[in-house]
Figure 1 (cartoon, rainbow, N blue to C red):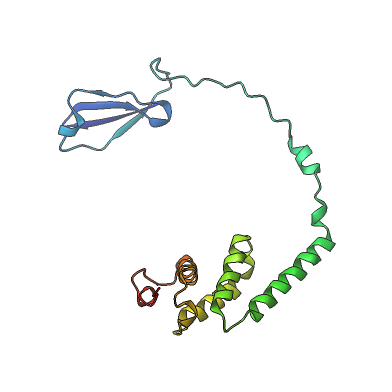
Figure 2: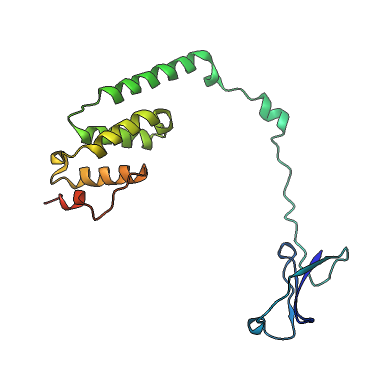
Length: 177
């Protein structure tokens, strides 16, 4: 157990037990009136103070899943045929990102949003960044004129991917209903 003592001008102002053992505080004067403190000195002691709280045991039963049992479990989806199928599907999605309608930025944003919601965005980071760069650099905003869904989707996705776009920018002023 360790005690931390803070003093001012040789007078012990407080004694406290380290936080992981509970706190025990003695003070000769309020700590708020201490203006100048010397460095804190910590003293280690092997004796256990009776005033510290003893943690109760919950008497939990040991886990029935030992390490040998967990290592013996097999997963049938780790076979080569499933990996090949996953690779094939990944390539299909890559083709989708390349072939998505370039004239319709809303379709591109919806594709990015769907990939994120499915938890697959980490596999297609380059494709997503290319789509968002094109949309951010595109000055033609006719595709979202009067469409609150398109405006909010663009704003959210660009903000999520750290594009510098403010809520009071010209983009938000162009939305007229």
